[in-house]
Image (tube, chains in turn brown, cyan):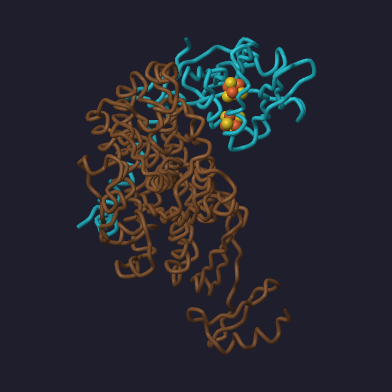
Length: 421
Length: 167
Ligand code: SF4
Ligand code: SF4
């Protein structure tokens, strides 16, 4: 692109929203505004210092952000398309790689949608076990986001602490599922493993430890006057804008909207449990941090209840258990580990459609599956929370100072591999 | 008024919160390193539940090929080796994602996970384990442990989070 023409036209236009033409990626400064001030364009990424790969194209007037454009797609892995080429079961390990830090929550609605089409329901104990892992994942997802927020503003203590403490939850998940991150625990019909012996004591210790640590987090990071100065009233998202833009998750609830897919969709063991949905009115970056802290507390409350109320019974649907020989059924009862029937490889839902949503650490995830009665889906549409929240980069940064950008980025907990799928 | 606003408006309160932040940091300054495990001198005992390297018990295998069919990463394949009448599975660790579906679907429990994951190979071919003696049926042991590393057990602790105690 030749720069001369576009440059002069930009000069005339000022720099309101959407008025800057694509300037071509060759030059910066970009032009002058009405008062003769130069605009600058800065590229952040795509190699990213903290989260996954993405690029933010920031246009600056002095220190003030005129426009910030999230440039996504660097970690796009064609998950939707790939899932059309594989059997229903085999897409579970695929989708959990979209948000590897929250793999139970991102695959759960998929499994529920497949279950709807197959007409099977997980037994109650399986629902409790799913809820247990989902909440463990939610805590580690929030801690992950917290650590990144910390390192974004150079608070390396917060980074180290929350990544260290996340290890406890990863360890708990490992004892339950056998894998640290890619649990592949939730499968159509139930879960793959029963609760191991002594899990409750371990979880309760972890909760007591974490409760104390959260108080430390508040002192060293959240209510540290340095953090407050940088997060308070920065990147304010109004209630109106939050619902208009379709924001989900803690970002939505920090703007005063009481919405959580766990309540709206009533899945898993949630309808039987007593917990709150933390909501704050302020809508600023600090509120988004505080909502996440409260959610960690609520998740721990859920875990305690789940472990107390865990019903006895099978953890895998009878419909499939009947397909395996009695000797294996005995093996399942003894070891607490599932044995899959051979037919499981080629699950064949009848032609039709199913939708399901669920609440991840980052917000609501939505699946739409279309089946033609084949062993592979015709289409799987995934709308991830990160994808719905990415618009905040543009919306919240306009008019903010440049050094507010890391704060806003950290506070919205954007996870590029999840947004790009 | 919220705590955050008090911090912003009241310099004395802000000073107090600064002090609280520093005091919290200082408290941990002298705590012993908590979660670091000095591998390979110490090796974490991953426990029976861990989904690690996979072992084939060839004597049990009935060559049903379900494990190869269920593998979402096409890591498991059936091989007919010279001199053998039947096909047996082999695993390619370049591809395996340790989902454990193959272990879960094997109708005769011929596959099992071992609590070992710290394996490295010198070349790409080395990562393919054919159903040959000493390969896919091998009893895995952590190389660090073989060279004298001490096993440590992970324990949950209210004070320290995770503790790693030598066994
Ligand atoms: S663990 Fe999963 S990826 Fe690895 S061989 Fe078995 S089925 Fe395939
Ligand atoms: S599923 Fe088990 S019995 Fe069948 S081929 Fe694989 S290892 Fe052999």
